[in-house]
Image 1 (cartoon, rainbow, N blue to C red):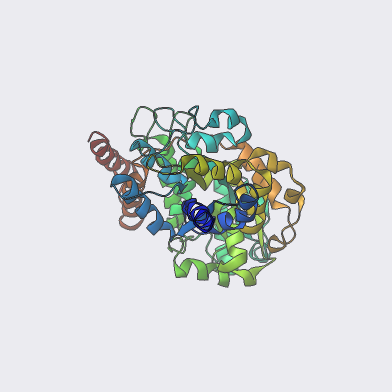
Image 2 (image 1 turned 120 degrees about the vertical axis):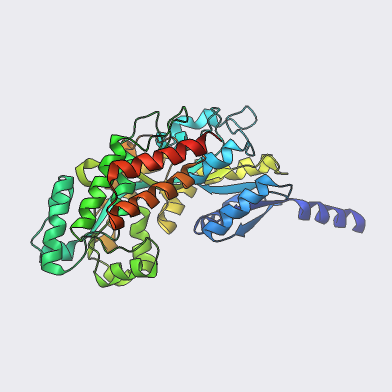
Length: 405
């Protein structure tokens, strides 16, 4: 009898699945464990948490080498295509998993981002980043401006920036590059990604990029950007001190500002749709199963809990400002609640509208490299006066060479 009990305990101890994640997805998974234990009392979930960059580096290594991968792998959307191309992730649309039975339950653009070039669903979206314009209402009032001055058109946005600078001394935006990032995210065709189309054609030498570079140059020429990079100490300090009046980003940034970036500015910020009703998305988290995982069945059951259970999706929304990819949650009364940090504004309704209008953007394994190339050329335009057409042509040539390898 003693040996039998010891054997049972040993068997239970072996029933462990691992989840590799980055903040704050690690906290979201942890908060779901009580619900998991109700249906899987003998299955322990071990969460391996690393900083964002370290996590994706570790996952790249796990898939590229013989090292043991986790059972569940969390990926930020920009990494999904890179990992999918390598063939190291399970096809969750296969009969073994059946994601195709749930495709109508997710925001279409997010699910499209989880599809590999071969038409396989290699990940499931958990949260999305509907684009929004966050702005300092107090600074606008001081300058005699209204929200419509920022959103009516790009010309109006830049004109408002000049007025803001004159009357408040604040910069319109942290970095001119942010304008470029928005335009290239939003002006593509359904068969296009940010930098490549579905046929691997480079798209950098196009009107979309010309407009993005021209607007960024207008911002810089008029000295309307603070020239600080996102996530730097100077960037955060600009928000705390009111040195930056607007920021384009995913809706999740409002939560970051409230929770740790600039909590003392509660009530000073508001959210709006992006200028000219430009629809774009910033980021998003996905769950995937590596082909080398040892507990695929349990991994899939956990992923379904995290992505298809409305209660878990809503919990993540409330605790971590993770806007749900699951459409059914978008009708929850929580979206109607005012947000104190945004002066009581019901901004989640704006973000829901944005989510409904965003078109799917194809992702490509070379997107991170292409971003570096394009940003380098933009810096040459902004800092050295390089001709925009020439800069884009040079970026095009370099990316075409890389794509042919």
